[in-house]
Image (tube, rainbow, N blue to C red):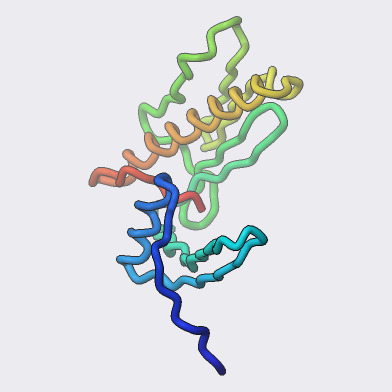
Length: 166
């Protein structure tokens, strides 16, 4: 195998990428560099970093929240270690989004005592464009708030500032 010749010079990085590139280089992330000469005689550099995703840390002893997406909402299921439905914890409430208050029935929640929950936004089934994107964002926020509330009931110590998406 032959090695490429060593090239030295100044490399200009856009401001928005500088911090991330320095961070990856300092942590020793593996990378590939491709030097490309353009028709105008200028050289361009393509840097590709190989980043491995962190292993998700879960504990099945506490159970899981299952989610099913539908055209007009989502269904959540609270299941235990064996995969059987488990009742919602005492005092469990679905957080109501403050942004939806145009008309009655815009945000519908059906909570079953045996651990099932359905959140329905009827307008989601037929809306398009920005409105649909907005409603999906509101629904996602409600689901994340439910996950955080549910996690607080199961975890005695505070949660980290981020939740891994698995």
